[in-house]
Length: 199
Image 1: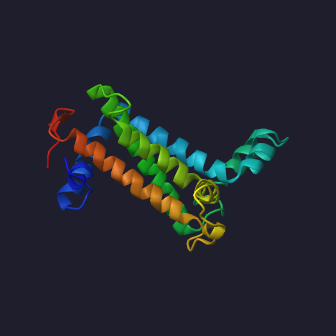
Image 2: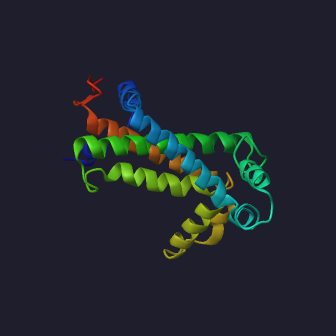
Image 3: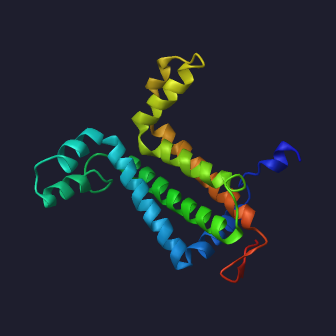
């Protein structure tokens, strides 16, 4: 198998339709829709908390504020509720969280219904892990990447990224999209909820 055959990318309209149909069929099953929604909410919460760990620890977890005030402080950390993110950052963060939820829903479906093990379903797991790491914290992501790349001799010039760390969220978006595509491709020819998965 050549590299071009082994690593397919969604380049045609049919590839994108396959992804959409597979996601729609899996998420019409209530248990997998619930998994996707819960995973998206949890990932968005992890993303916003990871950007504000000291604030969350000092005010929400260990503070002396009443519970309603603690929840209000926590709620203000979310995109479009508080002022922590500009609109572009907020949209990107919500989209990455939604794709993370969809990816986890598809991975869960694929593992449960097709009896896959971790080695066979590795693309979906890798997409979720990389998506979570890349989207959660642009500053943390650049610090982690800088630490890893410094082992290879790359300088601190990564700190001057043109998009202020949003590159990692964009990378997460690409990785999650590829993961969803590869999972959909892996389900091609089968059936989901009695409907064929083929475009």
